[in-house]
Image 1 (cartoon, rainbow, N blue to C red):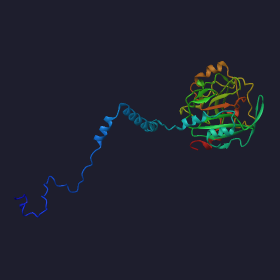
Image 2 (image 1 turned 90 degrees about the vertical axis):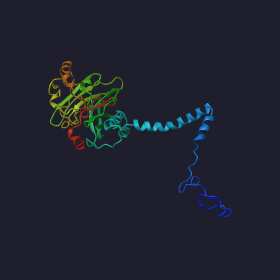
Image 3 (image 1 turned 180 degrees about the vertical axis):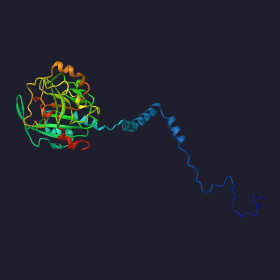
Length: 320
């Protein structure tokens, strides 16, 4: 018999096998593909009971929960603005607490003792030795008035930048720097007003009545020492220009300047009359609060507390 290669079966050496056809030849340079396990998985899944399938599905969901939570957490986490971060810090402060705790809440050290030491401040009920420490946060100045017992007898928050903290909680009420006007401030009544338009200070403050129980006082104001929320604001709008406060009666409990009149000249607490409040309402609705003072129980507001002096904060101004 003649083969395809032209050789007969008789001519082929004994024991030699017939050559494989092209279809049967192994492919050179390639490997056989591994058999897939999909059929086995399908058979395994089809043989499972409904309960077993439910358990597997539940385990898969549980395993995916941490991954989904992490993804959602990353998407919803928002970086606080400097003003929002400062608002959280301010909401942790308390007048009357130890100075060490007050400083810990602020998270920074004081920049300076503004008075260079302690000063005697006289109140209607006596006098106390107080030191004045200035802290500088991103958007506000915080001035702490510390007594000889190492407690914060009062503190003042003054806006430092145009971006100002909102929702500051003080004695159960919310105050927002740069958004709230003097007319809208939740003082619960105005016991006295303080106004000055001097060579070194331009400021106007309204002081609340003391709270029931442990007497605490809040003062809100607009001071040239702080940032002004409205760039079009003119200091001629101050009620110390019109209507004048000089004609108002001096408050019987008005604290004295105690020898520091050069820095706080003209800051005298006066009792507002109904006529004064009515005539000044339109102005007070256009004056945004940029400073807040709160006292510890038993301490009234003093002139030294309600307005930083511009010369004192100039070295720490944002562009200074």
